[in-house]
Length: 234
Image 1 (cartoon, one colour):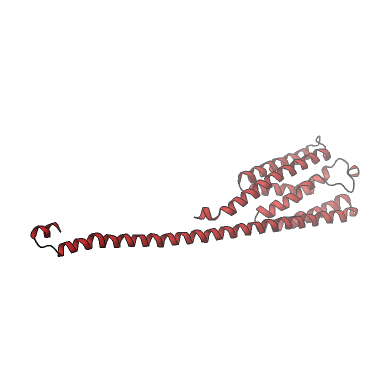
Image 2: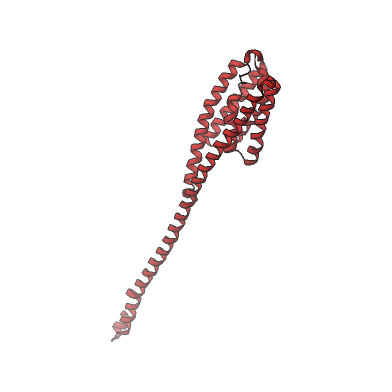
């Protein structure tokens, strides 16, 4: 009964995981392309950064798609947080990079905060989202100067607003699925109760028929017996 009653939520969660894994794969590929364009691969530090990002990204995609838990997703989110502080210093030439450009890790921050809000625990999400937003603001100003204040502030606000919007939408859909499951549970419980009543009534009718057709008939035959052979037969 429990498995049938939770089918809507189970199917919804499966679809959310699959869609998240697909989008994460696309965004991670875009991030890695920008990383190779911005970072000198001859420098071992950026190579390690990109390698770790790719590893945690691939494992997170597999974990979401195969429903293996959120451990790799949490590790991926931690790596993104660390790279916010580290990745800008791997840029080849800050002057060539330009005041409007962004370090390569920027392409993964928005989706990462969304995934943390959707799948991770409430406590972790409440700590992670503002920490990422504030870190991006600080690192951008420290790295590029006060001229980047407006752009960095808009980016930081974008991370939070976009994440909360998607998280809220997913929450509404989850509540709708939970209501469907609740209605299904009530319907199943009502059907089981009706089945019990019907089974009891059928059993009572069966016993009544047995008493009337066999026991009572035997008693009548015994009562009407007029000879020893009829009494013995009864």
